[in-house]
Structures are given as structure tokens and as C-alpha cells.
Amino acid sequence: EIRPRDWSSDVCSSDLALVLAIMVAVGLFLTIQAMQALRRTGLSFLTTTEWQPDSGKFGIAAVLFGTVLIAVVAVAIALPISLGTALFITEIAPKWMRSTLVALVDLMAAVPSVVYGLWGLFLLQGNIVGLSRWINTYLGWLPFFKVTGADPGSPLSSASVYTASTFIAGVVVAMMVMPIQCVVMREVFSQVPAGEREGAYALGSTRWGMIRVVSIPFGRGGIIGGTMLGLGRALGETIAVMLIISPRFDINFHVLEAGGNSVSSLIALRYSEASGFGLSALMAAGLALFALTIVVNFTASWFVNRSRSGASSEA
Image 1 (tube, one colour):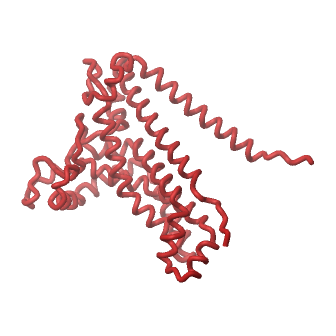
Image 2 (spheres, rainbow, N blue to C red):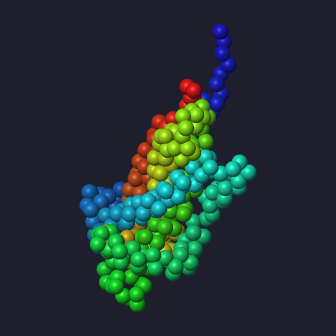
């Protein structure tokens, strides 16, 4: 029996090969450009907090930690919002409202990052200081929420210690990664077999009970994958973080405190003035960020592929 050739699989394979070839080319380019700096620093490049390429003392320990901290804050804020939005669209919202909500979420993903950065700088930052002060007042006993130089008991204490912080940058980045997470989760939740939903209702389950025992377990892989895709997006955010945060080169655990940094904002700030060895050092920082985002995104793809999306119900 002669079967027709599956052209769709050939197209997918060629697209995958092209994407992998581009990624390998980018990695090779960054590696070649960064070799001059990496030869001088070696493994200390990952442990040094200073950034003075001209004097030979430079590393990404501080900016890499700041990058991860901003991304973690962003994902911690975006995850419950995106999960709740995805569940509301697929399980609760009436049909006439779903298309509007989907369009609004998609429009959020289309907004340029510089617009989010300007929104965070001129609108959000001045209005979120009160929340930062409240968190410091009642949760300041936790190391992450402690602010050096702030007096939680005085409402007249300077607000400048709370501005340009990792927390504010994380809130802005959360608004940018939330649509990505929501889209992945929504697609997985929309594929929950109707038989499993109806079976839960037939057993006397409420709508929330059905969501808890059917939809969320079905979409667990999509939830994890969407969260990690958002994490990968947050790790590489540049303009919004650069506009908001005040650069500093030390490992700062206090998310509410002014000052922080990220690898991408470091590259954006120093690229125009760098030349020769300094440019090689920035390429080394970019290589580290590239490797980190690749690991996160491949892990996210693995979780999404292992989810139960597309499974059929026995009911």
C-alpha cells in the first residue's frame, strides 16, 4: 500500500532545523566575541561583582543575581494573575465575552516594552511607594523585604529609598510576561476533554470543584511551561528595567530597596561607550544570559510537551 507523504512533518522538521541553526550561530558568534574577556577572567567571571573591564576586574555575579531576582519577582506576581485569567476565560466567562478578553490579553503582549517602561517610570513608581512602605512596615522582619535606611514607623520618611527598586521593575516586567503565560495556560485549559468536565458535574461537583479536580490537573504541564516561558521572557527584558532601576554592582537581596541591575540593562547602558576589551566583556555577559534563557526555554518546552494537551477522555 502506498501512503501519501506527510508534508507537514517535513515542514516542521525543516523549521526546527532552521531555528536550531540560528541558535547555534548566535551562540558561536557570542562565544567567539567573548573569548578575549573569558580568557582573562576564567571562572571568576561568574563570581566577581565589580564591572571594571579596563582594570581587569569584572564579572556578572551581581548583575546575574539581579536579573534572576527581577524575573522571580515578576513571575511571582504574574503567575496568579495569568492563571486566574486563563481559567476565567476558558471556564467561567460567557462565550460572547471570551473573544473580547482574548483580544485584550493579546493586545497586552503587543505593547512595546518601552511603553511599559515609561508607564512604570512616570505612573506606577510614584503610586506604588505606599505599597512598598506597607510591605516594609509589616513584613520588614523578612530579609527580602527589609529596606536599609527606612523608618517603617514614620510616615514622613523619605520615599526615595523605595524608588527605582527591584520590586517596581518586577511589577512592570510582570505585566509584560503575564500575556505569554496566560496564552499558554489558556490553550491547555481549552483542550480539557468535555467528557471529564461533564463527568465531574454528573458526580455533583460544583464549577470550582470541577476546575480543581479536572482543569488544573489536566493543565499542570501547561501551567509550569507557561510560567517558565514567562521566566525566560523576564530574564531578557532590557528597556523597561533600564528605565526604572537604579544601577548598582553588589548583590542586593532587598527587593524593596532602591538600586539593582540586570545583565541586559548592563549591556544596553555600557554598549555605546565600550570598545575593544570592554565590548568583549559585554559579549561574555550576553553569552551567559543567552545560555540561561536557552536552558529555561527548553525546560519550559519540555514541560509543555509532556502536558496532557490533546488527550481524549474515556468518558
